[in-house]
Length: 305
Image (cartoon, rainbow, N blue to C red):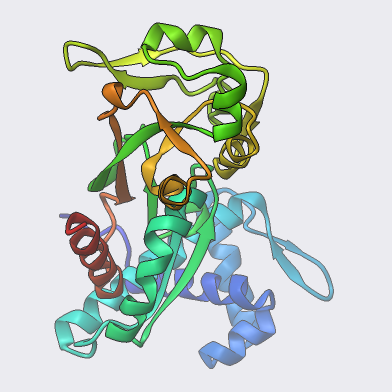
């Protein structure tokens, strides 16, 4: 393979990253043991080679342009992966250490992942976790995430998906709603009921319910209701507890409500459907040891449930 980066180019990338980190040629120069003028010239040569301005310069500060932000994130990750690979090969990192940035959906994070993390912290005390609980899809490159959990197959073919579990779905309602409106006994009965809707943030469409028909097949069932919630999947659960209507949700979210009687299962003869949850990470990125042990830990713990 022909060389694409000589020592000068790699050194320029390091100086660029230092400048972006400190937002100062002087501070970057002090960290690198060079003069501010040398760092400034290096960055200028890089901008000329790329044909794009990476920094906005003022007399007091340098700030990344939008193009510079994108380039910095990719360069930072690439340099980090090179350093990580050298540490592993040289045996300097025999135990996992460092920061893992992890994006989680709110419901799955609260109910499934977060309760497991104290045990992970005890097993790997040198690994730091930065957790973002959000139902939006994240950009691994732009936002610097190492891992994400999502409940649907990734659209991006550049991502690897490792299944954690198939999460069972259940239809529930509060006793007060059932006393007021009656209990449905067949799928067709749903048309006469208030069905609380959850709207996918990515599409703006209500999630269809999945029920098992008399032949044992999972079928999508469109439902109707006057109450729609988006972004926070726990909002419909609160509405259901208050007697607002029927709701299909993950069983793990409402297990305590079912045991305590705050909610009752509806249409149990048509239960059995599920949706998968998977760990996602970039396919073309070296996986540091600290990330690998977290992936293995979660897959093992959740598969055992």
